Amino acid sequence: MQAAAIHYFSGTGNTYRAVTIVGETLKRAGYAVDMHRVSEFAAPPVKKYQLHVFAYPVYALDVPHIMLQYMRKMPRDSARAAVIAIFGDFKPEHVANGYEGNALARARKALRKKGYDVFFTDATGYPHSITIGLNPPMKEDQIAIRAISDKKVEAMADSIVRLRSSRRRESPLNPVYGIFGGLFRTIGRRSLGKLYVADAQCNGCGKCVRSCPAGAIALSRGRPRWSLDCEGCQRCINSCPSRAIQTSLVRLTGMLGLQVLSLITFIGLFFLPYASIFMDGTFGPFTVSGWWSGFILALAVWAVAVFLLNRYVLDGLIWLGERSGALRPIFHATFTRGYRRYLDPGFNPVEPLPQAPGSKRQ
Ligand SMILES: Cc1cc2nc3c(=O)[nH]c(=O)nc-3n(C[C@H](O)[C@H](O)[C@H](O)COP(=O)(O)O)c2cc1C
Ligand code: SF4
Ligand code: SF4
Image 1 (tube, protein in one colour):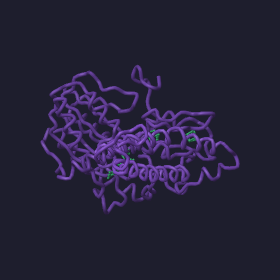
Image 2: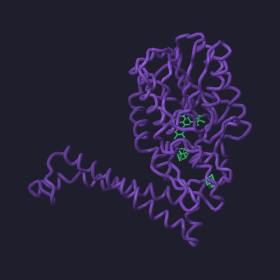
Image 3: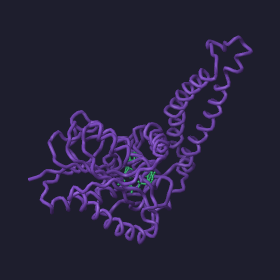
Image 4: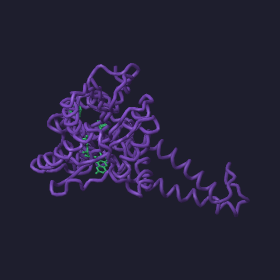
């Protein structure tokens, strides 16, 4: 019997829905199918498979950080591999309006480096779930979008079972999208977790902690606290049973303010070498000359300042403010309280046990 592995990451269940369809099709065709749910707590399997399917949501026109790490840890193999990316849609009449950008090309190259024969790549859209900033589609639109995309995934599954080669067209702008995606993977996703707040509805049940695929949430005195390990997957905000997780306006304003301040600092530092021309090339303990040295100095100081301010000063101040009864309503101010929450109906958000040895949560 042929063996197939389906490796998937899914924040809110859309990708899980798609791979369930692919898995059923593979089983009907006689494959023994193993499903591998990607998380901080799971390592790639060492078992040999004749066919691999990789599936994940599109984040910032690229592959999610957690999925790319997983692909890079896959054992070297020359087996056949298919890749499916799932993007977000708002209206059924615009299904496929989401855009995968560099998400398929990046995965194809990462897998090819490991020796895999990537014969199939394709993408489709399911209801978007970026609840941190946008209201998910209405219930009836969700149902209609899912019905359209299920059909598309059935067609993809049929091609995969027949090992029919097909590659979705890749954009010439992918190198540009790739820079955007790379910035999101290294910096952007981390700041998303820092925008959340648990409001007065939180009862400390800990479901968000057990659901986070990145181990980025911990309870501190009965309330969730987000670390910089967030993947941006939107599972916590969409799956809290009390709908207590919100985007904090104070945090959002603080972070945007910090970006503006740091940009001003960056520009100021960049021009330092020009000022230093009038000071024999020295400025305090630094000797700087030429535009590039100013650029490197500015970049280094800017990166360290943003990290330290964000990690210790801004986060600490907000955490203290949230604990003070009088100030709490200000810190709980949000625009997401009235937003719908979105999880695919068949998806269990809680990460399964047991987990990989050496993982953050044993
Ligand atoms: C941080 C983040 C970035 C996203 N970027 C894109 C994007 O660039 N293009 C797009 O079409 N959808 C984008 N989406 C939407 C998701 O791809 C979409 O909601 C997807 O269906 C989620 O799948 P899941 O339920 O398996 O997590 C983004 C979602 C998140 C959370
Ligand atoms: S899941 Fe919701 S109610 Fe439970 S601890 Fe997390 S934020 Fe609070
Ligand atoms: S903190 Fe929330 S959004 Fe971030 S990885 Fe965990 S569940 Fe996903």
